[in-house]
Image (cartoon, rainbow, N blue to C red):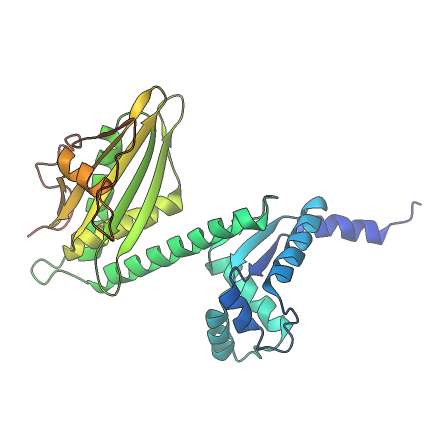
Length: 297
């Protein structure tokens, strides 16, 4: 009877186990963790180099690894809430496991950390923006007049407007930016909408959810803001156009307003030379003269 090689079996099982690594992406967060005796690194660059070596080794062994953004302040709050000792590696492991389930994560795909860190930070910002906008929408509660949930109705209206914007856009890659002014800060969200060779629009689900939530918040609260679309297709100039948030809907910007927005320095107010091979134009008609779905009074 053949003898079972238990070590070989364990190696196979290790390849079946996915792991998550909490990453300290900047010097400030790294310094915050150095107050713990069990956190033995004393140089952020060395820490990143060693982390990258660990990631490469895991990848060479066929092990999938997910990267999560490790926030020292959230970690301290987590330890306080759960009664864990923050100066223990096991506590950091528990927190990282929590991040895997609820936090912003990206898969390690072999790229250098210098390329992956900005992607991870963007993902964290996107999730935080979505959570913040969703919380504010939920707090709006029902309409005092008709009882309809204002936040839910605004999300429905924003979804309708986004669909119309994409349906009326020219073929090609679409890059949308929506900003909503508010306190304590302005929310900015980005959505990429690419078309395949058959004309089908591909959207990232998380990006779309965040974008729609921010737009919905602007509509529901009637906050100042705007939405700009840039389309790119081979063999033709890029087209840039947009709308301002007006009440609970979108009002088109003129070609001159779009040109001024793109060709004026935000801080100094000085004129900037327009990009070559770019058309600044008025947006297509969204066909929303009739009120889109949602809450209206």
